[in-house]
Structures are given as C-alpha cells and as structure tokens.
Image (cartoon, rainbow, N blue to C red):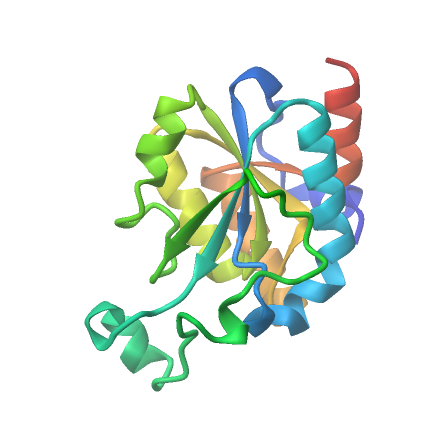
Length: 196
C-alpha cells in the first residue's frame, strides 16, 4: 500500500526534524518473521535513510527471561511467549543492524516500560521518534502512544510496520493519525530527509 492510500486518515501534517529525531525499530525478530519479512525491505530502507541523515537507530527485542516477567502476556498468549536465548528471540539476520546500534530488551508491548528507553532518548536530546516494525496494532501502537504521552512527537510508518491483517493495520493508522502520530512512508521520509 502506498502512503497516498493512507493520506485520507491524516488530520495533521508535519515532517520529522533529523536533528532531534530517533528511529525505533520494534521487534523485527525471528518469532515474528511471517509479518516482519514482507516489510524488511521498507524497514532497511528506512534505517538507511535515517543513518544517512545521522538519525540514531534503536532496535527493540521482545523476550521473556522468567515467569516473573510474563505479566498479563502469560495469560493472554496462553504461555506461547518469546524466550530469551532462543532463535525466535533474535533479530532477523537480514535486518540492517550495526554493532554500535542500541538494542532495548522489553517484556511487554511498550518499549518504554521498565527499559530505560525514555531516559536514553532524553540523554540523546531526542524529541521525536519514528516508529517502525511489528506488530502495527500491538507493540508499535503501544510504543507510539506511550511516546506521545511522555512528550515525544511521534511519526508512524505506514509501510514499515505490519501485523496479521490489513484491517488491524488500517485501524491503528486511523487511531495514530487521529490522536497520536503523524503518518509517513519510505517515499515521504526520503523526500523530507533529502531536502534537509
């Protein structure tokens, strides 16, 4: 789907500022490969565009280390969780991760919950985040909402996020545009960053 398809949801328009922005790449792990692989090209394109503009890239990995960190997910997912130390917990091999990129480990939908991400972003002088990854309607949406509530300006990718089906994806994009985030895609990001 092209961004123009989603522009009908936009209620506001703004471009990210590369000087105060960070890219969040959410949970592009082997466990989610059925959703992550189809958007891998767009994710890597977004990462490359951000690197060229000196925008820091931060990855997240969703994983569990012991029953004490299952929380409601233990019940909600019927015990089918992503466990630390398993191949499923690893980032996709084809993902453009550099050795010096930050990787934040999380055990719930939000990348902000008990991870130190907010403090890291503040320390880096970040005021805006671009949210990409999987799942659009779960970890990406929760992270975007929390970023907004914590005072970060949020940009949400329409073509570098994915979930189980188009209805769920579109529902999140509508919610994001209505109350939490500016929408963008790879093409728009490229135009914005090349004009700076």
